[in-house]
Image 1 (cartoon, rainbow, N blue to C red):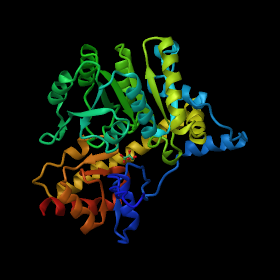
Image 2: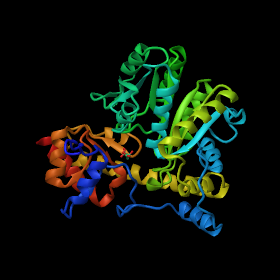
Image 3: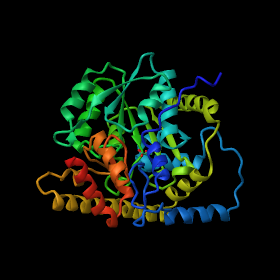
Image 4: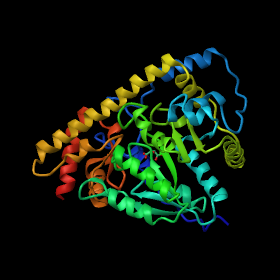
Length: 400
Ligand code: LMR
């Protein structure tokens, strides 16, 4: 019965963390998973999270089930964070919000919703490249997906022309998966004008935007500025689906805090969509976990804690920006004939280095630097002390 089950390959991202753990080389460096580290490369708990937890523990709360749709105070907080408190869509009650299991779980509920409620054969267009888990999330719900052009390796920038051509060619009614900000893995986002053009195109072609918002705060350091794209689309009158994660910006990775929202054009539709999101979540995982949602709600709903979070967010984004600059300077000093400017042009947690799979193998096998095989490095896992070592390994790998 089970003897014929084939071995699954390691996950392209989390498998790198497993390999890193097994490595015994003292020089080893994990730039695989996008998880923030402090300057000592240790996992960091935000002060504001500690404060929220202290409040929660002091209140002596119980461990009852949450409703299927999650914690009400969290649901309010998450949509406020996304659209800005007092946004007309919130006032009009036309957003269906279900708390779900961080980014992946939220996307998965969204994929299940597409499979069940959008016309059969609806295709989801995803950027080429994209986060390694997107394809599986849709494929495992039997939702067809196709790539749209996104990254231009020659300019190390956005292939906006290719993107627009591909979206224009998509059948009306298709879904377009967009990264809210700080595109993973490329670190390349559309400009404000390009976002506006994409929104207009979605309107003209009747495409449904589905935002994956996993890095709000990591593009500019500013939580509001980083919500520019989804806010613009909603302000232009588009209906949108949005998956949000608090893994990165609150550092609540293991707590699985997130939400799946559908911004509709009227209140009744939102009520019905929420009822169906609940119907989908119940047989998947019943109801979401409590602790992380309480933390997020405490922080976003409390003016003082929210202000403190914004400052800590700036701190995390600032540390990444600093090592970005240091890495570029080290690469330029050691290999001046090559253009390394892409390192600081890219934004968010990652740098998309252009290293080939064979060069990535050299990074790992020879230098014990762990990274994903698409050439992505997480700068959130780098500190100043390791910059030279990384730069030398990159140059060695490029030259060989
Ligand atoms: C990443 O891209 O490294 C993160 O989103 C972690 C994950 O779940 O893959």
